[in-house]
Image (tube, rainbow, N blue to C red):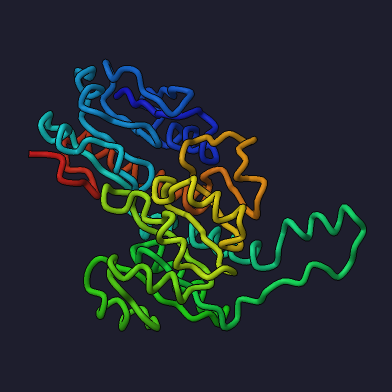
Length: 318
């Protein structure tokens, strides 16, 4: 089978080479960028961060499977795929090691912002010892928006730090509060309450029409002035102009960003002049996570060969 990988070969820790080594009997091709021009001749598409529109699907003549290498399918036209009898599948974060890897990066950002990693670098350059003074995590309030695989992994990994955790979940809030032993869990309409109480606000939810710009000028106005915002999900969750204004004015203390309004972002963007820890969309890119993802995708391609239903499919097939 012919398999198209919509990214450069060295993206995400060598995933392309890992999957190609696992399935040497198949032909793999990388687009070299987050864009797909034509699907003709391909049986499987791994879209990564590229849009899969109905117009693009019309260029395919034999596509059988759209297999995401992570959880996000918001850029895939699932209905158009269904009409063409194309399977759409992802790799849930909590079965590949991805959720744990993303949670670890979130904690790294929390610590880096709390201990003022930018200030540390400045002190080292200026030969100053014993400063800046940081803030400890113990006793701080963490608000997690989205209690899926990544949110749950964060809850588990944050426990030893002695933080107090609240969350936002679309459904079954009482059940989530009890099962995860959280101080408080609200619904999306309760987001302002969570923002008002949190020292750290961490975004762990999909970007949908309902959640796009969930962090905007109004919602930021409810945050503490010494609070940090951390986005581990999708850039579209945050209104860039509102965030930059909040950072420049000191309305919030800083931000941790692994995802952006456009990717890759302009490295000279003025938002990086403020207290921002930025990483290049690598929260889930670890050895453990990549091996787990390769295992699932390899199994799905083998299933496709045998005319079996792939694992973790969405409503994309009649």
